Image 1 (cartoon, one colour):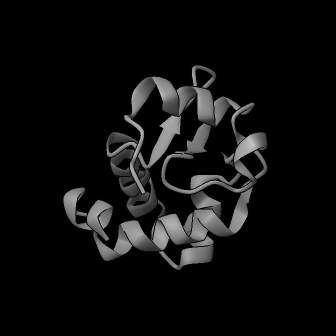
Image 2 (spheres, helix red, strand yellow):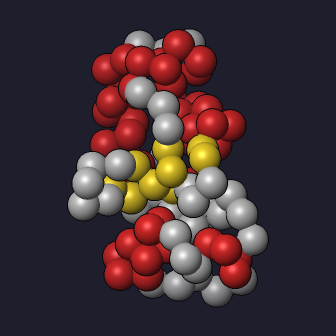
Image 3 (tube, one colour):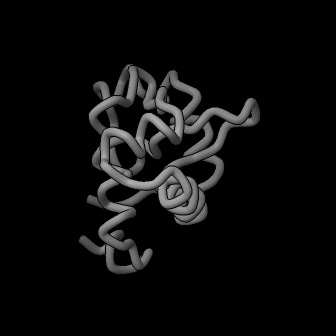
Length: 102
């Protein structure tokens, strides 16, 4: 909840992230196009593009050097922590975002 409030996420942002969560692959790689997300979330492609840009800025999604989108494993992980530590998403998150205390 604090991430939603602190990052001022809108209902569109939440729809996008929930859609992405359904299709994130192992290693927290986002493997959908903007149009795929728009179709599944019943949004306009430009809304998705704007929301994804906002989610990257909020470090909920991370952009790899190769341009892939990755779900920040400090917030949500698709696999167990031991396996997650070996992923590009984890390495990128370790450099970009502070560890969250739970």
